[in-house]
Amino acid sequence: MPRVVIVEDDIYLREELIHTFQKAGYEATGPDSFENMEKRLSMLSPDLVILDVCLPGKSGYELCKGLKVKATFPILILTARDSLDDELTALGLGADDFLTKPCHPKRLLARAQRLLDTYQKLRSIKKAGGMSLDIDTYKLSWAGKALVLSETEGKLMELLFDRYPKIVDKSELFSYVWGTQEYVDENILQVNMSRLRKSLSGIGIKNAVRNVRGRGYVLEVEKL
Image (tube, rainbow, N blue to C red; front, side, top):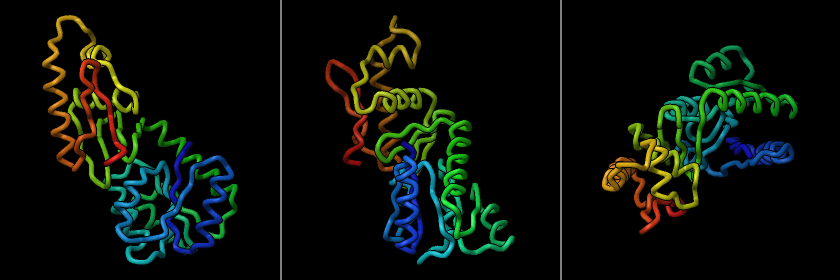
């Protein structure tokens, strides 16, 4: 179920938009505080953000610009500002679409679904808790931070994401990452898991990859 986050300071409109998306089968939410919004949005790990322009603190334009540096999700600007300059500014800052309000719910839903479909075709994003992994580039994002994993680290993480929250057997890791279980020293797996943990700690992710003695490894994100 796609997760849509509505960034709108008008509480009544925000609730109306949330209801519209929920009724259409989406998971929808909207933060009621606008402090540290970039970090909040990254932790919510949305599939799509509906973003107003006139907001407390940072404007929607500023948020859009900041988010697009690291974002792996589309942004649809929904605003009462309807000039061509406003639309060109939004698109120039990286917004994926621009609609003026009031907007018919069916039009909004259609545009939202188009963006979701487009991004799904462009890249494959896997998610676990607040973390997301782009398997095309092995870019891992969490809490507004991001890093690009090596190919081996990326493959290990991809399989852990696929099986989350289940344990991944060592034999499966060997087969997926190295293509065989024959003549592979188990120390190789331990060394690469240590490197993966070190890489993750660089953006503040600690204890997310746990060794299950005698079996394999499991991804734990509940306490991150």
